Picture: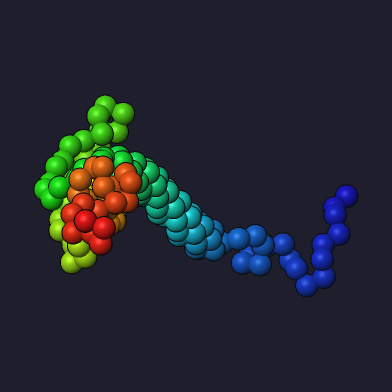
Length: 148
């Protein structure tokens, strides 16, 4: 006993199943799509790593800026260093320069990091008062006042 066949189909020849060419084309399309997905995933991972280093650099720069601004007397100059074993890829530079406004110094903190041979940096700038530590603490300036 044989099974009934669909009308107009003989079950033989080019009408039955996929051809080898169709299979190869479909595999090629899937491969192109897979490569695109893998490339997008790799790019997302690189951006995530860059964001992590930028966030850490921002945290370290803000901490160094606070450290410099807490000093009672700052003077123009430059200093540099690193963040030790905890953050071996990061280094810092602090530059203190005179400003155009009397009584203020411009403090610039630069944090630099190197990842896979690519160097990047973050720069923070702030103004800080300078002068005699007693005058800064009390807000009183010395000499030449109206009551002198």
